[in-house]
Image (cartoon, rainbow, N blue to C red; front, side):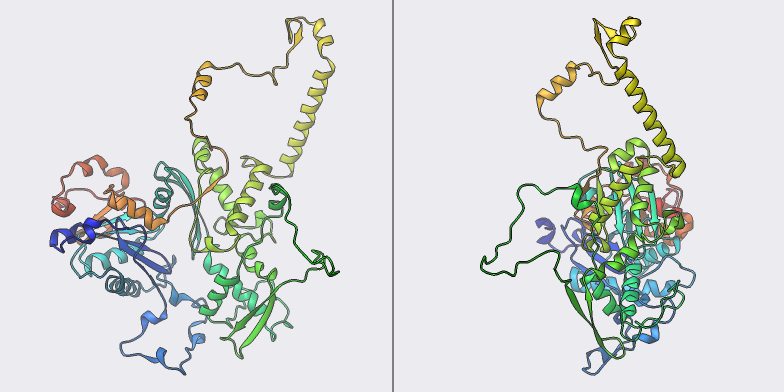
Amino acid sequence: MRPITSTFASPSSLRAEEDIILIEFGTRKLLVGFAGDAAPRGAIWFGPEQQRRVGDFRAWQSDYHPDWRNGASGDQWGRDYELWRSDVRDLDLGLVGDKIERALRDAFTKYLLIDSRPRRIACVIPSGLSIPLLSVTLDSLFGRFQSPTVSLLSPPVSLAIGAGVRSALVIDLGWAETVVTAVYEYREVQCNRSIRGGRMLTEQTHRFLAKHLPHNQKKPETENPDESQEYVLSFEECEEITMRLAWCKPHPTSATAKPAEGLSTVEEHDESDDRRPSSATEQPVFAAIPLKSTSPPVTLELSYNLLTEPCENTFFDSRYSPASFDDHELPLHLLVYRCLLQLPVDVRSMCMSRIIFAGGCANVLGLQGRIFDEVSQIVRERCWDPVTGKVLEQKRGNLEQMKQKARARLAGSGPAGATAQPGAGEQDGVWHDAANIKPEVDPVDEQLKKRGDQLPQDQGELRAIESIGAWSGASIISHLKIAAVATVDRDLWQQQGAAGASKPGEVDPKMQQRQSLGAGGFMRGAGAGHNPWTLGTWGAY
């Protein structure tokens, strides 16, 4: 809930300056609200309806059918539903700025109910955003909304704060890509990326549905279906089917690794009825999927077991060996394991016990548990050894054989062998095994255990936790007036632009904290031009 003082206070200019608008930028949508709120006030989704001309009311006609095939040529299928993309070579940056301006004006009018008075803004922006896209975003906020300052916040750090931890491993299953970020003491220390995300899942679902169409079942499957991709479904319909029916099957060892507690449940049935349910004779359950955007419209009846194929091919792709993938297209379980493997031991022990799943694809049924089980299986097999292969497995087998032989020799030459060499392993006439001897009791640890107020240590164990979200975590940061990593002033940005930003190491954070604040929290002397400022992690791309 929003604080009562800011909700029912008088709408003076000073009160308007104290309100901080919090915006979370995503590839598909914007989340807006006030700092201090528990949840955003509204969400603005991007789509082709935002690009309508003034007076174009064809969408409200009863006989109107949009021609989606005109914009589905090449890689333009679904591009109208995105704000930006990572490849800015053929991207119209002016159109991106217009989309941001229109979305924010709609959000301010419909959800926030505020006027056009300048207000401070805090933005949750991906840390991997390129400089051109960041410049367009700041130009829109400074030039068209006259915001005096804009604070930049990182989504992984905000998710960690939303979970109530200082260190975490954030797995962001986004639309364009999946980003695995290791956060240690509120700082991003490691970041790995993969192109396997929501867009690839939607394309795999389209390919799966197109393969089961009646006129495509007789066609032979090509080795590389990306080259001959022909879109036969609209993006809206394919995305809705993905959200409703796509699911991920569990790991093969997940059911046997965790046995059920207590007695098994017995289904009630009529004793006089000879027709008893049997698991061996169960028929697969089918789902009727009506497709209205195809020509002609059809209805597919597919088994629920087949609907796991798009998710399996998108996020895990077990058809190929791990050596056949590049660094930017690793399956998710290998991506998470590699990110943990590259961390130092102390950082890894903290992050692996605080795994946070975020993003739109995290809502896919069974996907979080499958990733967690796959990573656990890799850790049990490989431990934390970066070297893999048949030669290493052979050496490990030889070492195990040598250990077993040494143990057999020690067991065979017990007290009898010890009498020949007194003092070798015998103390007071009793044979002692140094490898299996119990450690001595530490009186300090015993006193600490008797207190009973120690929290359980979960370091070094894989564990998943939940977070209230990046927007809510950033709302806590802004409401508590915690200094952001990057705070950009409007006058400095309009004078210098992105080229005037200094490197993060060249800016002293203590000097920024010592600067006095004026009314409404505005920094005095910020526009003098001699104070260095930085874009933080956003200036590295």
